[in-house]
Amino acid sequence: MAEPIGAGFSVLAVDDEPNIVSALRRTLRSRGFTVHTALGGAEGLQVLEAQPVDAIISDMRMPEMTGAQFLQAARRKMPEAVRILLTGYADITSTIEAVNHGEIFRYLSKPWDDDVLLSVLHDGLERKRLARERDQLLALTREQNAQLAAHAEQLEDKVRERTRELQQASDEVKAAHARISADFQGTVKVLSTILEQRPGLTDGCARRVAEHVKALGPRVGLRDAELQDTVYAALLEDLGKLTFPEQWLTTPLHALAARDRDAFMKHPLHGDGYMMSLASLRGAGGVLRSLYERWDGKGAPAQLEGEAIPLGSRVLRAASEYERLRSGSIETRRFSHEDARKWLRNGSGTRFDPRVSDAFVALLNEDPDAVPTQSLSVSALKPGMVLAADLTAGIGVLLLSKDHLLDDNMIRRLDSFKHRVGKDLEVTVYRTKT
Image (cartoon, rainbow, N blue to C red; front, side):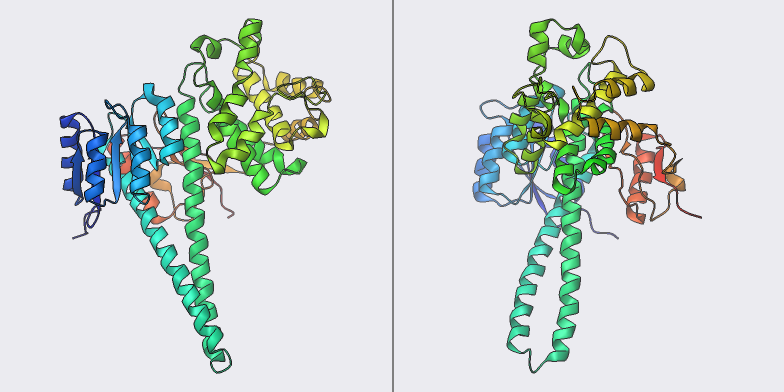
């Protein structure tokens, strides 16, 4: 019989409602976890003083100490513990604070799904195991290097063998880093999807802008970290709109009163401020900050002109305006594909960098079937297939990101998820050559 997923791990569950704590305890104990509980943040910190734990699950809304404050304090006491936040939609601003200051691994909406909660715990603890393995591999690498340096002349054959082992260890470390990077990118996409649940923010718009950036950026010289920062900026473009009145989001930009429009167009500055505290997103914040600068120098907030505007910001502006014209969030009507392309051409040299707008129009003119894809049910998936689009299920639920390589284990998990929700999933993958 397979060992329960929680065997050997301990979890602290914190909520001011005893029935919620009891429900978490029952669910986690049934999967083999050792469970500690606390009815509030202060009591939870006392538990951490006396008892190390592998994971912490906390509610956001609690009296005296919020979940954000508790998890920030818990991170200082036990930085290696996996932290999970249970939150409601109304708590989104506080949730961002918790992510920024408490380094949350995941956050889930209440009421939660037990299987999703257990899956998140499993992923978080797996990440912790990988970090431990990475440290062990690095320690082993240092030890082996010292031995090889001392006995190089006498043990040439041994040197070659150790070199092969070190290469394998390095590959494993790189693979672990790639998984951690993929987790971070997935988290940004989940946050982007959650942002789009506000009325007036078009579902999927940010992800489409990000896809345009990924395709357009390399054509105009955007590479590596700068390209990745611009993709993150595209996904989180709406972050600075969190506190805006709903009327501003449901009214096309050009239909807003002048004062409201001026205030609305400061959302890139707010977004930059939110991202400043996360080192991995500071570059994206800088790209977003200059979203409304114009090639002719008549933009905001700094009236930058021409090449003085970051290239990522110039690319993002063209891609964002195209999609938001199509969605009807800029003008009082939804632009057709052809009208939006004309807008790009007409704005060349004024709103847009001519080189960027020309390259984007050329990209939009290309055959959309140049990279063939196919939509399959879960039962038709095969190991080695690669996702050609983000896989989502339900409101705000991002299951897998585009370009994820499917294996047997992930296909089984998708099949299990399909049976739990009682509905098949439509999975878009790249066609393989025959």
